[in-house]
Length: 187
Image 1: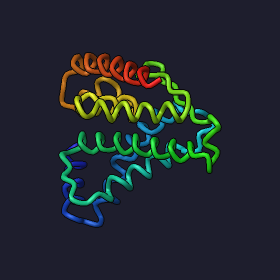
Image 2: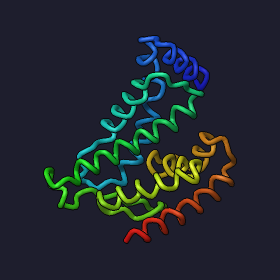
Image 3: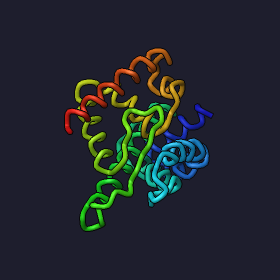
Image 4: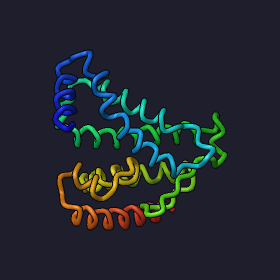
């Protein structure tokens, strides 16, 4: 299956219009699982649904021009980043006063997570801290995206990042502490 996905991604790079429709059935369930995992932590009042998150992320991924896909792992890492950006954009839209942004309806709770994000402001603070982390430690930022925004397990993140699960656990512990401190400083 991995080789089939890699072949289709290569065809997509070459501009094959049928490649996108071939790819979707192969990756949809995994993307849906990732989105569902992410959205289970969202407040019940959240208007963005896992299916919508998957579809928007998928459209962003296949709509990119001049992207060289290095296989399934690269695709799913890009999907994690796309989901993060979509959730951040959604939080920003919901946070504007024009759309009732003074109400706190957006809640994320991560039991083993980086921080306890209770509203859109905190999600935006997390995004700012994660962006800051990416400047000095891009691999750690990518790990946070994979674990926090895409809901990957330690083993899944290790596969995507091509490192051992032990290294992922060590990096994950460091990233959580770094982000918690960075977000605490802002308050």
